[in-house]
Image 1 (cartoon, rainbow, N blue to C red):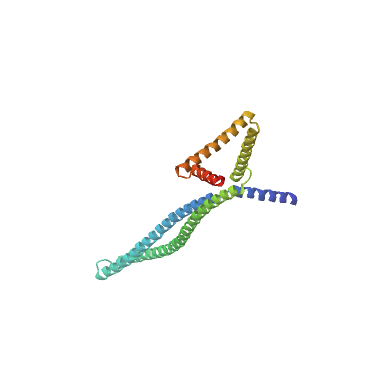
Image 2: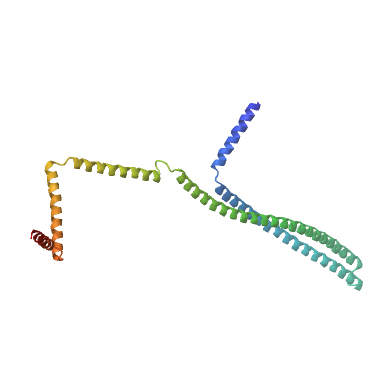
Length: 252
């Protein structure tokens, strides 16, 4: 039997854990605030009703007190009229006694109403304290909810960034750049290889033409240099004349 109890406890704990994972703290807080606001509304309505009872008791107490005073005044007036002989003493005593009975009844009713008023006002005071506590809690929870929402946004953004940072693998941008570098290096090496192959596959005629073109370029450059020197008076003609003069002197 104990084994079944333990298994039930374990199952219950796992169920509670699953529920906790499904619960959203923000939604739970919002629902809690809505519940508190409902409680606040009910408390305000109850306080208004109890206040009305206190006011009614106060008014009733005053009404009974006024009637008690009025019956006392009437009893005095009856006795005075009997004293003046306006009514018989027996009639005055009977009516005055009735007035005093009514006076006592209203005095008792006034006292009861005052007690009810005191009791209702005490209830109003307690309800007012509860309402202030509810208002304070609602305000506090609303501030906490606002903070919780802000923290949730930050945590989600941070989590996303951290996940992106932690996900730097073969499919990440860095890996893609590395693959691109390898690809470019491979293509450059392949281009160089094709260039070397192309150079090795030149025909004899192409080699001859290349050599002639190279010599022709050197000749043209030499001719251009000579023409420039002649233009500047630095031509080879003067040098040749000087050389001929030296040769003539040597012959003589």
